Image (cartoon, rainbow, N blue to C red; front, side, top):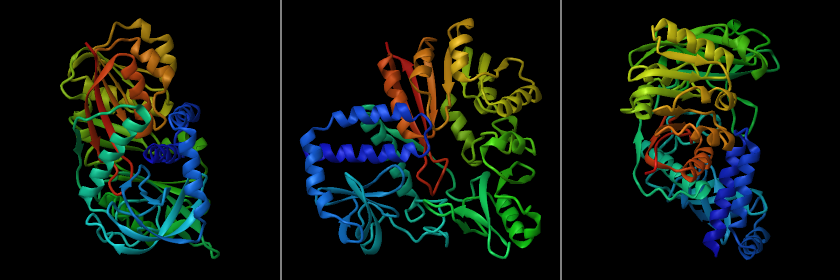
Length: 454
């Protein structure tokens, strides 16, 4: 009975982490409610009675960390109460102080490490724990990779009811110096001096950072230059974007939020050559940020797929579309974001690829109104935003009856939801690969190859 309760508590916590970044709240909430009904009333009451009444904020407890959960926190028990602890490692024996008590779980912070896990290491960055940019620097890199595989497997099981017992392969590159895109925040002190860095965890206070280990060296040099010459930062700037191309770094101070993204995007275009093609992308156009692993991502997603027609949904600036043109007679790229689609069309033109056609429509609209104009595609690749594809897109996607599909995901929870739907519609999972596009953080990129079941 207790195990069922703890499963439900983990589900609740995973969904809470996802809700912070996922826009499709109603669909995730639907999954959440369904999973609640999988737990008996007696289980929930037992968890509340045995846990919540005994624990209060400010109290100190000794706990053993059993696993890491998506979001990066360690998971432990105090009696039958679930407790989540940041900056923990599997196997840690910790003394923790309770900081927050919710209805069915609590949160704590480490007061003392009584016995350190073998997975622990000294964090290489002096800002780790204060800066909110990284969550896992205290873990060896091997432990980080293992944790991310577990995040994917657990999300499939808990949220998608998919018991994948096959291998989840991993792909990784250097764990530092990989990030070609970053948005750093700017705050000013009482004397008007600019402080540049990342937000602190669960805060909008800026942790000043003069050098960031995960940035590519060229971006770090520009960051250090801004610290040395703060007059380069406009007085009204609230953030600065670093966009690293193969020959230059575009440094773009900006104000406001996403409403001005098109104006910011138009301030510069960076260029990278990837797997034989030249890609141009704007400051705010989505493009994969791990310069060291992006080619592996392309090869993993496309593999040996070939044929007459491929469809690339959520195509962005054409990362996959251009590569698909090597092995397909025709490629249709669908992208609703205007700046990204404009960059994509220019990339098609500049690489002289007449067999790639862009459709500047939302994926939802294209599937509803335009997909019927095409013959059955041999291969569909979709790389949706963190909110995933969702039920309506999946329903219309499977109506195209593509025999092979690749789903590229940056969020295990929405991936699990969408895979459950695809399996229900008759697709089978051929392979799952976890790519560590974001070392030192809890994020993981997943590529799932699917085929219509016989």
